[in-house]
Length: 255
Length: 285
Image (cartoon, each protein chain N blue to C red):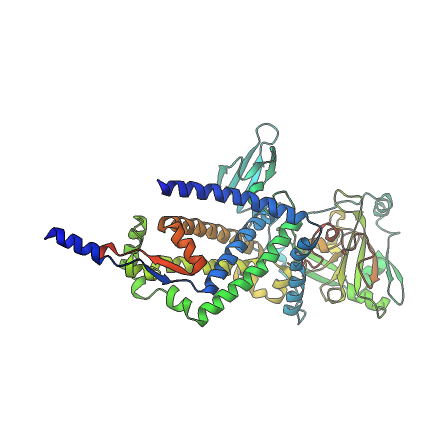
């Protein structure tokens, strides 16, 4: 029957089209040129749309104690390889210093004790990983905006870069992240040193890690050693503003 | 007598009637939508594979009990892929949980031939997903906007009260089950099941957008009510997955009906707009 032939033909045609589509998508995905750049426009649209929706700078939802995850998943690095870091950890980070430099009026070095004496913010928030899972935890830390204000931003300051003690997972490149000034001065953007009323565990980025509540987990740099204020991200490492960003992920990770 | 009647009936057979069924906007948005859904589905499965577990509520990670899970078991001796839904478990080796990629057996949620890219690459899967999500939303708004403006949605897709009566619906279900598809006058408009299916899938597509947005921490800050609406980010992710499955089911039935009703006429009408009406057999004496 012609009907059966048509149907068989359709199925074969669909399979062939499917194969072509997949091969085509793989090739487009790996292209370094225009097509990949067109695909990456998603980030521009997402960034613009979300900045518009967040015009009133709303806070991320804060949860109740009862909502806190029994186990907060450790992801990415769980212990920096650096011998210096491990030595510092062994003596309770007594010799550890947070460096704040770059485009600031007063470059600063702060000990953990000094940071813990600054005004703190505690928030129970949801941590959303780019992979899809979520954990809820209670974070205590110093608002980043406070540190930046006391260091004093120079007029050409545009981005805040976090240099970390760890290398990216399975990599020899150092982990780093960056945020714009809108996120840097958001009240929930804190450098946390406590999780669930305990000193921050090393798996979660001791002694100090970023909380950036309106973006995905990979933006929340752990083991922060140095905060550098810059005017552009191009000159740093891969030039995309973060370890994962240099590997194809969006710099704006609000979705 | 019978002879003349037959001859008369033959001569009275109405000429093949063709109607203009789909406007240009419907045709363009239909095909663009089809392309977007295919890319969104396949890049969505790539994203799902990064954490092939679904939870209910606000939170959910490795230590929490999943509602749905694709995983591989017994990796040392006799590796098998399994899907767990609630308390049920099915062996899905080769398809879900464990499948071959270029001849090598790999632990992965959905198989390589269902994902964009075909290899494991969450970053690129997200790029495809969000880029086509934007096209999908703009295209969908165009369709809805035009459909309301020229009253296509109200006139052609909204079932009448009479069509929603149990008797009418039951009749329609029986006709569909027998693949007894409308002819003549009845074929000039959608039947109630068709209307409900099209309206239903429009609602599912809107649900996809809303649950997708609920997974965004940035959107959640702006619209916290979204999180409440779906009972949490992880519930939203689960609903996103369930409605994706329902849309795949819709497309399967849709394609089956296209084949049953006549591939050339159906696909042709969505390209040219013109639809050939099959003459009504019942009207012949």
